Image 1 (tube, rainbow, N blue to C red):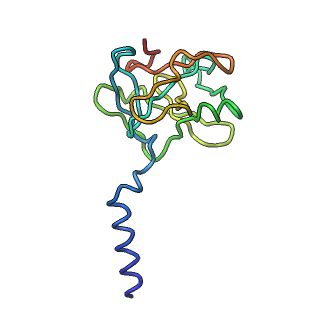
Image 2 (cartoon, rainbow, N blue to C red):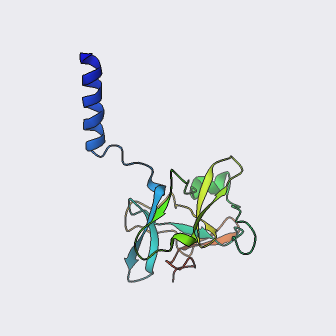
Length: 148
């Protein structure tokens, strides 16, 4: 009984410490920059990107065309739990698409969403405008289109 109480207390301390913040991809919010205007980020402030070579969900279903080496450089934003959006975003633009590995990737405005592996935390958006893997990478505006 004492070891169970100690275990529960340690788990409580671990959760309260912020060591477990939950899935970063479960909540989308916006960030603002002078260069790019408003753009989507996850709950931890990491920039989110769309890939112009992907199939946008308009009118058919979305499809990711970023796999293998592409997905190493541009990790997909995997849907966790019940994804939600913050202020200035539209819940009706939020969705998910099944990847070929069976995971569910978040979409916004019909575009599958990605991180850029070279971004280094909140405020870092080094992938905007890069051309790689057969398309262009862009930050995502709150309307679901390419940011400026």
